Structure formats: structure tokens, C-alpha cells
Amino acid sequence: MEIRDLFELENDTDFQKINQQVNSFNALKILRLENYEIRHSNILAWLLSPKENHNLHDYFLRKMMEYLLLIEENIENPLYEKIGAILNDSLIDSYVYREVKTDKNRFIDLVIVNRQLKCVFLIENKFYSTESENQLDDYLQFIQDTFKNFRIIPIYLTLDGEKPSSEQYFILTYEHIEAILNTILMLFQDQISDEVYKFIANYNQILREKFYPDHEQITQAIDIYRKYKQTIDELFEESPLLHKQLHYEPGYQFQFMMKYKNTIDYIFKHGKNILSYSFERFIQQEFNNKEVLYHAHPTTPNLLPPEWVSISNIPLREPNYWLGKGLIVWLGQTIDNRLRFIAEIGPLEYSGRIWFLEQLEKAGLSFRASAKLEKARYTRIFSRMIDINKWDDMDELTQAIAELYQDPEFAFLRKQVAAILNNETPLIENASIPMEMPGLDDTKTKVQHAFKKWMESKGISESHYRVSQRHLSFEIPLFEAFKEKLGETREKWWWHNGPFLLWMRINAESLLFILEIGPVEADKRVLLMEKLKEQGIKFHKKGLTIEARYNRIHSETVSIKGLVETELLDVFDSLYENEDLQELLQKLQFVYDEMIARVE
Image 1: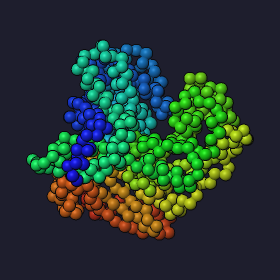
Image 2: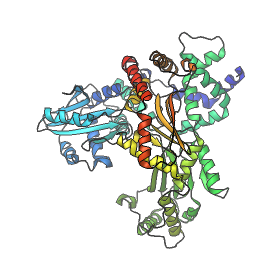
Image 3: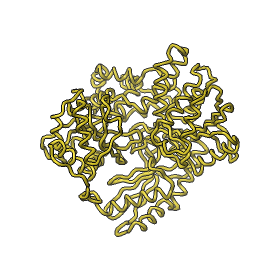
Image 4: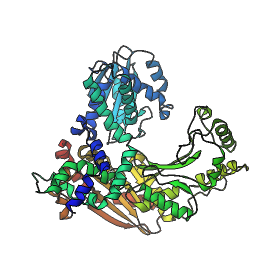
């Protein structure tokens, strides 16, 4: 890399614009709050307490209760009606307690008690980690024994709305917390101090970056990466050297890296986004150069299925909607790193929209009553998600997009919609849908189904494993604990961006089973690898270098030729219960207990 390359990058106005955005001052980022669950709990305790110095009184607590009623998954909760009754009264006399110790020496993250209303809210906060065995039931039992004759509202707060093991717990996500903060910033600026406002704004920014990434900024990062790919790649490869103790190099390149490290990391992370490339490959394979209207957007690629071109006959109220048509199919990455596939009706002129919805209802589709209101703009008519293991694998992404598009139910919907738009009689019953995807390899299908059953038998929830055509992967609570302390990897790694992962590659007649360490931030990774070496865990000597990114510390290959599902379940058991692997996991637990748990 020549110095001229650095000058060219530094003088790019788009690069400087992203640099300003990425490095905007945020005190909470300096403290690395975003990576530590306990610090989120401390902030939530402050916001939830009506007696604290934020002068919001019971607003945050009340809004959180309101969201419990608005979240659709909570409607079936047996305690649902109790919340509405509580909201009839003031919550100002509520008191918040942190790390409440139970009779089983466990600690409840947050307990909110209102003795006047005789109600208690308990909140289990899971930012990266998951619940341990009987944890939620134990917490609830302790609170019930402590506060007899109180109305008790248990809440399970997670990043992605993970379903709790106990049906009595209400679901709440950090996305809803961010929505409350955003409302506070809009409504209370004149009623709270500047210091409190700035603090809430900083915390809100951290959550927004987690849940609402700036698509325009990401698109800009992708453009810069494509324009300066070789320079960005070389700078990123050398950036771990900056973590080396007292490291210094003379010359402009070292100064450049020190000045723009965060920006280079950001551009590298988002610039390698290959969803748009995978989408373009899917278009070529699916339509074989036939004319199709599409846009390979980097974060939400979209298309109009060719069968639906007659939607142009119904005028749009908003001509700038997606591709300028009243129907769209779009894809995107979910918060928990799955691939989402949506078919949607857009803001058609009202009369045409009502006619279209009514025709779809006659064909057997159903919609909420609000979809027929004149103010309604968007209505989803199909939604699916699919697991993605490796988000940097173009083959896997392309195959996943094709699988979603070729889904038998969506293929049938395409025919129904096309018939309606062409004034033909739509099919009513979907008797022709095959039970399995055509061409899907039988062995892979059996392995995938068996793996899901095995995950269920191990009590591992869907949010902590992935199944794709080529790979199976999962994480255990210990890996999540490491992630909470060490943070996410410095580049995209699989679907969870955590330090450790157990994964399998499905081959024609065998399974390759691997435990791997990913690209943790350089200084933390070296410390981790040194501790693993002390425990006798073997890996390639390059794993101790500052620039190392991946290391396999356990692998095994096993034959699956001709096995039925019950035999595959036994194979998964034997792979996981392998004596060497279990000894290795015990050593990892020791490393965590003795060293990593203290790292911040």
C-alpha cells in the first residue's frame, strides 16, 4: 500500500462524512456500556424509578407497562388483564431494587414494588445471555412467596423477543425500550435537565444503532469499500497491531490507522455486505436473463415478481414507494441475523386497494380490519424467515433467497395474485403444494430435522441455533457469557458474532463437527488464547499472534450414511458428549470463572 492510497482515501468527502458519524462523541460508548448486561440493568433501574433525579416520575415505568399490552405475543398471557387494572392508578410510589437475592442464591436483575397498589414487577434482563435451568420459575416462586396477595407481573426482557420458558412471563424487547426513550426525547426536552437529556440521548443512540442501523450510512460504507477495497482490506488486516502494548511505528500509515481505526472497522464490517451480490446472483439464476423489475439494495433488496406486472393498472398514492408499483417483495436481515422475506401491498389509491384486498379475501387470505382503513398504507400478504449460518457466504445466501422465493406457499400465492390482477378466477385451495421443497436432498433434510429435535431436547431455543443447507450451528450459555464480557467479534462471524461457536458441516455421507474461536478484538483475543494455552488447550501457534482471527480447538468427523432420524439423534449426542470435548468445555468454564468474568 502506497501513501498515495491513504491520501486518496482521506480526501474522499464520503469517507470523512462517515468518519464524523462513526466517531461522534458518546460518553456511554467510551465506557463500552453496550457490551455489558449489568450496566444496561443499572440504567433501566434509574429510568424505572419514579423517585430518581431524571424528573420523569413514573412515565418510563408506565410506558413500559403499556408496551406489555401492545405486544401481540403477550395477549395470551394469563396475567394480561392485570396490567390494564394496574394502569388505572398512579405508579409514583413504586420502588426499584437491583440484584435481589433469592432463597436459592440467585439474583433477580430488577424488582419493582408498589405496596400501595399491592403489585410487583420482576424483570429478568437478558442482553446476550439466556436463561439457565428453572431460572424464571425460581424467580417467580420467590417473589410469590415474598409478596403474598400481591399482583405479580414477571417480564422477560431480551434483544430479539426470545420466548421465555415460563408462559407467565411477558415478552419485552430493547426495541421497545428504545421507542420509549425516543418519545421521552421528543416530549420532555423542556422538562428535564440538559445533563439528563444528553444521557438519555446517548443511551438511545446506542440502542438505535443496535436496532435501527442507518441504511444510508451503510450504503455509503459499501460504496467506499468497493471503491477502496484493497486499501481498506490492508488497513483492517493491520489494525490489530494497534492493540499491541506500547506499539508504535514511524510514518504516516501508523498515524492514519490510529486516527481512523473505528472508521476503517465500520467500513470493513458493512462494506463486505454481500446480500445485494447474492440477490443479483439469485435474479440471474431464477429468471435466466428474462426481464424482471428489481433493485439490489445493499440492505433491503427487492423485486416485483413478473406475474404481478399488472399491478400497474392500479394507481399508487405515493409514486416513490419501492419500485413505483403497488406490490413488492423485499428481503432483509433481522435483528437476530435471520433472513426475512416479505410480500407487501403498498399505498395504492383507496378504491383500488379495497378491491384488491377483498379479492384476496375471497381467495382465502385474511387481514386485520385496520388494513381496510383509508389511512392504511402497507399490508403484508406473506412473511417468512430462514436461518443463515454464515453471512459472508454468498452461496448460502443465494440458496436461501431461492428457497424463500420458491417456497410452495409463496409460489401458490404468486399464482393467486396474478389471477386476480388479470381478472381470472384465483385458485382457492392449495392442494398442489408438495410436502417438501423440490430437489432438496433427502439426507440433508433428515439431518436438519433431527438437529432441530436434538436442539429442543437440549433445551436450546431457536434464537441460539441455526440450520441451513450446508451448516448446523449452536451456542451454549457459556459462550454467551464469554460474549457478554468480551463483546462481539470485530467483524461479521457466522450469525451471532460471538467468541465461540459449535458448528457442523453437512457432507454427502458425513458430518464435520467443530468448536471454533472467532475474531475477538485483538487484545482480548491474545489474553484469551494465552489462558487457553495455560489450560493445555491445543491450537495452532499463530493463534497467539495479534493478527490471528480464527482457531479450531476441537473437530471430529462421523459417518451418517444411511442413518434414520433416531440414529442421527444418537450421533449428535455422541458428538457433543465426546469426552475430549466435554473436558475442553470444562477448561473453558474454568478460564471464564478465573479470568474472563473479571474482564471489562
